[in-house]
Every structure is written in structure tokens, then in C-alpha cells.
Image 1: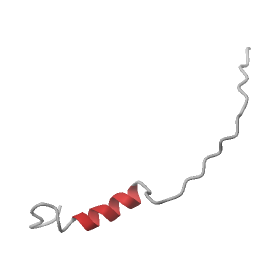
Image 2 (image 1 turned 90 degrees about the vertical axis):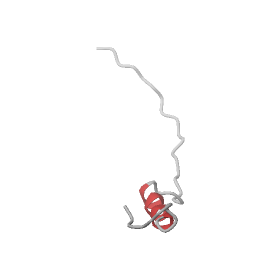
Image 3 (image 1 turned 60 degrees about the vertical axis):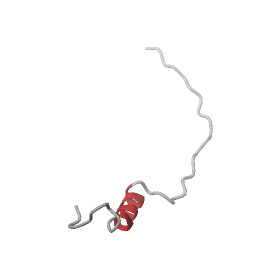
Length: 43
């Protein structure tokens, strides 16, 4: 909460940085797309 923030204009820059860090925006994610065979085991 920001005192006298009114419409959020003053806290927008801070909120943007916090959200960016929280959701890890801008971070490059590499996925492993190798197929793994599915084998069902019966006991």
C-alpha cells in the first residue's frame, strides 16, 4: 500500500518490477522435448 498513491501512478513502476521478478518475465526458458516411451507395469 502506498500513501497518497491516488490512482496507482506512483506505485506502477515498483509494481511492474515486483511482478516481473515474481513471474520471472524476460527469462528465457528452454524445454526438453525428447519423447519418453510410456510403459505400463502390471503387477
